[in-house]
Structures are given as C-alpha cells and as structure tokens.
Amino acid sequence: MRSKTMAAALAAVASLVALVSAGSGASLAATATGCQIKLEPPAPRLVQDGETALVFGQISCVPGSAAASQTVSLLEKVGNGAMSSTPVATSTSDPLGRFQITTPPLEKNTFVAVVAGGAKSARRLVKVSPKVSISGPPDGSILFTRRGPVLGVHRNALSNRVTFSGTVSPVLAGDEVVLQRENAISGENWHRIDRSFVSSTGTYTIHHTFGVPGSVDIRVLVRRTRVSAPGVSESMSYVILQAQNPNLTIESSKNPANYGDPVTISGVDKAGAGIGLTLLARAPSTKKFLPVATATTTTGGAYAFPAQTALVDTSYKVVAAGTGPPRARNSAALFEGVKFTLNAAESPSTVLQGQTITFSGTVSPAVAGHAIYLQQQLPSGIGFHIVEVGAVGPTGLFSLPYVPFVTGTHVFRVRIPGDPAHEGAGSQTFTVTVNPNPGAIKPEPAHNGAPPSEGH
Image: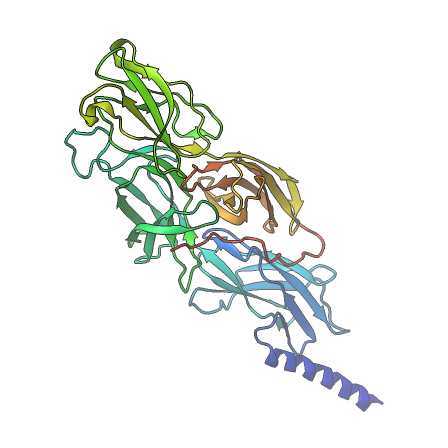
C-alpha cells in the first residue's frame, strides 16, 4: 500500500516537471515543490517610458503545500539584456494564492517573470513606447507660407520657417524622428512631411516651411524598434495663411472658429470709400470661389461683411468693383479654420483595478469613422499621451471604454485630431482614482490600450 502511495506521488511530481519542460513559453510553470504559477499578461500591455504596469496572477499547489502567504519576487529582462538575478520588487500572496506587483518605472520593452514557493513563472512582455515631446508654435496658431505675410515685401527665404523641437526618452540616439501631417477626413492617414534624427542627448530639431495655405494637423513619430514600441507626440493644429495684398487686405474676427460660430470678414481697400466689394468663398468640396455677400467701403476704405458661419474650413476672397490691375482689385485668399466642437464626460470617476471606466460624448460636426483619442497625463503633469483610440459614430457620438490597472490618481482627457476640413479640439480633464482590487483581477481586455497608427 505504501509503495503505491509513493509511486503516485512520484508520478505527480514527474507530471509537473514535464509541464515545465514542455511549456517554457506558457503562463503556467512548476517545480518539484508541487507549486505552479499562473501569470496573467501584465496590464497595461503597452505603457510609455517612465510608467509602471501591474503584474498579477495566482499560485496553486498540490495538497500539502501552501500557496498562501508566499513571498513573490519580480524579475525582469530589459530590452536585449539578461533576466535579472535579484528581485526588482516583491509582494506576498493572499489566502487563495493570488498576488499583484507593480513594476518599477519602465524604460524599454521588458519581459517579466515571478518566483514564489520554489516555482518560477513563464515570462510575459510589457511593451514600452518612448516619450516624445514636441515644442513649436502653440496649438491653434496662425502660420504663413514662405511668401507671407505681405505680398510684394522682400523677405528672407527662411522668414516663415517653423521650428519643431523636443526630446525622446529614453535616449534612442540615431533613431529617425518623423514630422507627419494628417491627410484623411476620417480614420488615420498620417504622412511624412519632414524628418530629423535623435541626438546623443535625446533631442531633435526639425525646420519646416509650409508651402500651401490651409489647415494642418501635425505630430512627431519615432517608429518601433527591437527595444521599443512606436512613440508619438501630441498632435497640433495650425491654420496656414498666404501673403496679404497690401492694396486690399482681408482679416477674420476669429481664426480658427468653433464649429457653428459666426465670424466677421473685414479689411481695408486703399482705393478709399464708396467701393463696392464682393465676398467669395470656397469650401474643400468646391473647386471655385462663389459669391456669398456684398459690402461697400467706408471712411479710409474700411469694410466689413455680414457675419459668416462656415461649417468646414473655408477660404474667403474679396473682389473690388471697377477697373484696374488684378493685384489692386483682388485680396489674397484668407483661410478660415473651423474647429470641432467636443463634449465629453466620464463614468465612474472611482474604480477598482481591472474595472472599466467609459469616456463618452459628442463631436460636431459628425464625421463618421474619424479617429478620437483618450489621452492620459504624463507622470510629470506636463503633456499627455494616447492610451486608447476610438472612432466617431455616424451621429457624432463616441464611446471610449478603458480599463486601468495601476492604482493611484490619473488624469485623462479626450482629444479629436484635426483633418483637412476641420481643426482638432480637446476636452476638459478628468481625474480618475484607481483603488486596489482585493478580489480576482481579470486579464486586460483585447481592446484596451489600442495605439495610434504609425502612418507612412
């Protein structure tokens, strides 16, 4: 009888050892101690440089071995390095053998594994994107083409060159930094318009001159490497204007304007008072300028047309009545940007680890399929990065469910990037408190943390 019991015990141990030998990449691992560890994928599976992730799972043991109150040690392998031989963090399993450990701040793609009760788990990957900052003209600024702002005035060729600079962390010296422009009305269609490289100190500088008036939405991208996921900066929207005609100027009372807001087009005609003027407009969908209003100049040649309400980015031009050279009778084309109107709310504002919080609201105008981002504030409190990508529905509604795992207070906002017909817009910020979950934490859902497109 005793020999049969001994044989059964040896068979059980042999089956556990076989499990380890056959599945080095599995989430379960065991040793002859009779314990095994189920390690869930760390969450979030994609973080930014300097952020942490939650490592969690459960220890289970054969009868006679204890899964409770085990010391759980976290090991990590950073980039192309070796797995650490000493723990980088520790925790203790609960009465059911469950455990959770918050990683130290991560810098590059990192494999993690845990050791507890004489058993070692399989390793799991946390992808880490570099932190990419961008500095340039403030978001929403008016910029000029290489010929602006006044036609006929001699200007240095570099007068309207715009400089974008920033940092990449960790320092990925020599990696390409790409300046991209959004070219799609809906979805994400980013294209390279300029580039530079990360310096030995982690900085970059890109000089760019915009050649065509209109609306631009730009960002900076560092593509994925063997040690890092792709990283993108915040997107920024600008209105690009061409050179003014000093003989017949044209200005807007607000540029860019919010969707549905009226604006007043005004200026000065050097020909003086009593000149009849016609305001022409061209939207992205039309090929020609069409008349929309008339006015007559007053004292000193000043004029103002009745308020205009553009629903998409629109170019305006003024034509003066009478004879004379075209340069004197036609103003430059004034590009009027129109910003999305974004309303957002979150529910709830306090959650447990692994529970869903939903950011929802409306966008006007409704551009079905347009990308919309959930962004989280950086640990420094300066700047945001994308943690979820969604799409605007046919009626302008959007919903961005997100599951946070790292405890503490986090600040989020919703942002819709611009496109060739509208300027981007952001919501107010939302403060969310994530509390420890004393129960079983479900694995991160597949939709969580969708990254933005790398583009072309």
